[in-house]
Length: 159
Image (cartoon, rainbow, N blue to C red):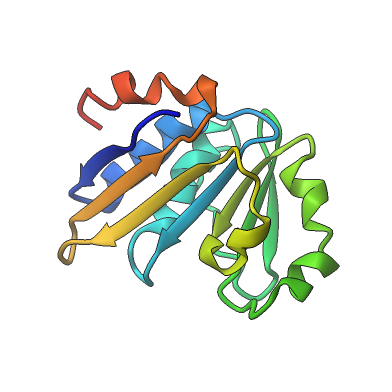
């Protein structure tokens, strides 16, 4: 298991850039679990991940707070869940979440702490912490996803 990677982002643009680098390494059926408070940069990170997966510039990415899931088309299908409004697993079961988690696309989940008991063991956890108005501490935990091990060397460079 790879140890965590900690990145300091000083702007939304740096957070998007980090997301793009992460997205370029993802492949099906990867699951990215995002943890962080309101305003911590989760949606900026998703914009970059979507761009890195080849789905345009990512500007059209919006949190699917009211629809629970948005789908984008890049190199693979991209499933973007926002679970803020989910209070229990029943809502996820109604969406047949396993089809997304173990399917032919990449799944990105905001507010993943709400469904931790059903998340795949092999996933990329990303924790976003607000340091101040613009600065975020972003911790990546790639678990056993070997194709993400190059993240450590890539992120040694400036984001």
